[in-house]
Image (cartoon, rainbow, N blue to C red; front, side, top):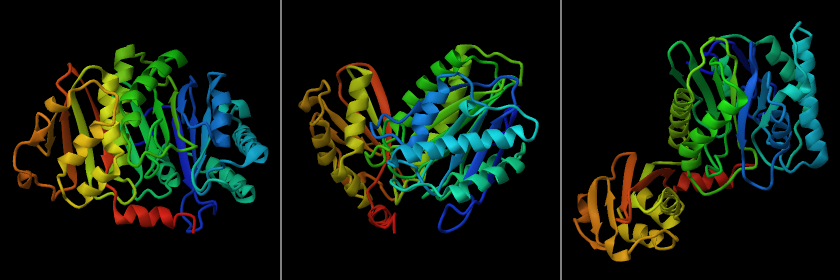
Length: 388
């Protein structure tokens, strides 16, 4: 149940020595067609990694035959030389694919990187790793590919949804810097449906809007975020736009939940439900503001249902609401009604990993859910020692 579940795709994951601790660190996903249509979304950070800039150019052509991904180095903030490294990686992969009697050009290859920002990639290790990955391509290579893109992740992340005679698969990495746009993540989605680039773009943008853009572990935006959706057309089935969007959204939602479940140092998986908003934008703003509030996050780490911190966070937003009408519940206990104390907060059970905060604004019919985590000692330790 991986990215190679849809027909027409092969993948591989190999160890090239990019990670100081060893392990798989170069992944390939190849689209064998007959189609090679693509859509993608990328970080909104103005500081973009070289592979992001390269892949954005590639997608303008509307065709991607392969994706090469590496962990062990982000290739971000590396200047023109870093961009040349990305170009060289695509050229090397194209040559390796063509040497096997297949057909690809560097302009049809997307590149993704993840790891520490500010350092050049060791090309003397990466390029031989790409060669080895090409040799290892198989229909069973999805699991290895998903493992090869892990950085601080503790588990590989895969998801599949089946349609009527077609399917969508996906893999993702990401455990920190989880904040829109997207997350500090690399995601490759595959489908054997027949779909043009425009249809893929519509489905992907709606899916990411409702899933990846609504996870927010720490409010930090990555330089390398990339989500790619590749279509092979190998099923010979053309789903409706609604069917395609629903399937892609379901896979993205599954992966988004896995990302937040594996967030760095997290002891709580927190869903912030905002109800009764005047607009969807208001609901998202309120949910995101609560998700990013360190006082709320530390309270939940300490198993403290401190609704005052939640209400105070809501008050910093520009959303439409009256402070004396807002209700707040924590794990189903309405600890705040009408902007004041209600049920006894001692009734709230925070002993488990899953926490639901419900904020009802009583301003309309719109709603949204933002997923986040608590702020723990382990998160501080991991990110203070990340580059050492």
